[in-house]
Amino acid sequence: MIKDRKITNAMAIPGLKSPDEIASDIWGIHPSLLRIKNRKREVVEARQVLMVYRHKTLKKSQVEAAKPYGKDHATVIHAQKTIKNLLETDTCFTEKYERFYKCVL
Image (cartoon, rainbow, N blue to C red; front, side, top):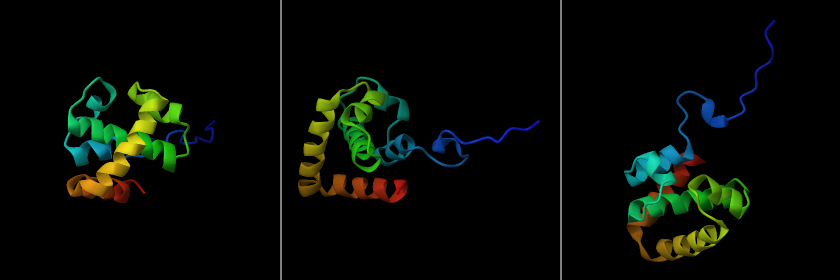
């Protein structure tokens, strides 16, 4: 007897990239770097965008948004301020940020 199967993870759909994979492609890093201690600018920027995306767009709490990356809620608060500042001052970051949201939404 076949039971009805539900897709419990939207990212389980073949060919659909996760937000982590999309950010990794845009910032030119390996997805595993997002989850380890690393302070390279491209890794930090991608991680910050992903945490803010999870908090603002997916309506996760700050703790839930930070947890997959081994960070805490204060890091999400800092990421929000940093992204706001970078969007006002860094055109290269702004292009990557807009490309990320275009791909994810």
